[in-house]
Amino acid sequence: MDAAPSSSMALPSLLPRNALSKVSIFQRLTTPTTLIPSWASSTKPNTLTLVSSNPLLTTSKFPSFLRCSTKPDTSANSETHSKPNDEPSSVSKAHESDEASEAFSYGSSCASSPSESRSHSSSSRGLVFALGASNSWDSAEVGSPVVKRFLSDEEERWYMWYHGRAKGKPSCDLIGLAISSNGVHWERGGGVARSSSDVGFVMNCGKDWWAFDTGGIRPSEMVIMSSSRVRASSAVYWLYYTGYGSDKVEFADNSLEFSLENPDSFFNFINDGNGKVFKSLPGLAISQDGRHWARIEGEHHSGALIDVGSEKEWDSLFISSPQVVYHGNGDLRMYYHSFDVEKGHFAIGIARSRDGIRWVKLGKIMGGGKAGCFDEFGAMNACVMRNRSDGNYVMAYEGVAADGRRSIGMAISPDGLKEWMRLQDEAILKPSDKGCWDDKDVGSPCLVKMDTEENEWRLYYRGVGNGGSVGIGMAISEGSDIGSFRRWTGFHV
Image 1: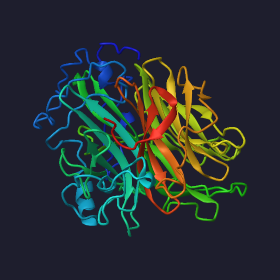
Image 2 (image 1 turned 180 degrees about the vertical axis):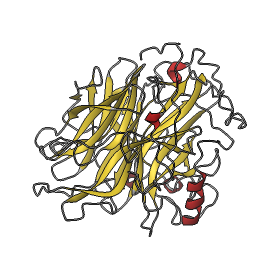
Image 3 (image 1 turned 120 degrees about the horizontal axis):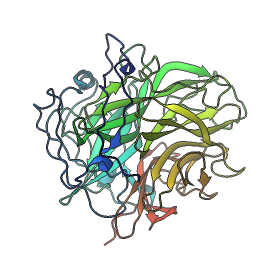
Image 4 (image 1 turned 90 degrees about the vertical axis):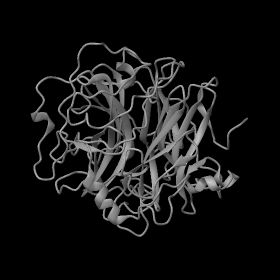
């Protein structure tokens, strides 16, 4: 990873979206902004302390960051962060919590997910996070796992942001947070995460009539940024997410053997039968504790970061799953997917930014695979990481077969730009055998690089069963081999 310079950097005055007046953040920017992840910015990685120069924030007692792991090969997705214990201040969206408490029953967090109460039989192999309780906010749908592992000398802590939806409600997808000490057994909440130590649902759909995310939200990536304006080690969570509105875009292609869906959901946001799909755009929100969020204005009139392409461009229908990777000082890359109408397949594109807010598209980098392969009809939901051991980029992605079946594939690139090559023609993770909880589709991959002696990778994913089951699963690589993953069956002593 490129080393970050120690020169002063200015974090922009980030303006939350206001329900009364729509003010763009770019009206306040006077100089280019450079951002770096907290793990790259600290000159003293073992003494990270959260100190804010903002007088509005000094009244909150934020604890010091946990000590960074000094073990080699800790991935960029494993930035060190503590679990705050007090309410955040200026970035809180308190009204969202109030509204949510009226819609969902609120209670103490569940000790574990339902899947943990039973042993890992062959039918539940790999399942680590099932649907929530019948009266919870995530009782009907879970998915889009964004998993981060934080290390200290005393403990390890795992955070997972994911989307969910309640049963029997026409409500939109919401974003929630679960935590774990090992990445397998998760503590979750059935209602609103009210304090900075709670788990549960943490972000609601947009409320502004002009916003792009009033119909649903799904997390895509979490980047932990910092600025020497408040001290290099003071970090802020940057959540890149997909927002769905009520607008629909025309789509007419009778050649597909499956229904084009956006969002790609097992439940209801599907092609309405009239050649239309829901439009989606990428958004950004920031937080100091990963639970209380303030949306940030993008350049698009709806508040989104970027807009769809023109009628003849490959991304003219929608933009989904903005996955952002820090490459170097002033160089961030966003990987996203759309459906290329001309080619008739899902495709992944890339955009670049200097500040993480203003983006320039570079074009499509991956489309459909070979005829008869698991990804013949395209690639979507990319998860990109820089492999610090060799400097290459790795991409886990959801491949779509000719019949619509979903599997997970892998691609590599030396620079993370346009030189992407599929690792192999076979999927690294396919749906399970008939009768298992994920025997229909597997997708929405999220990679986590471990720093164990085996140098293994973990792959979190969303699984769907032919019988209607849905959940989040985990697979483990065979050592450092990213071309071979097996579903988790338990810890081996």
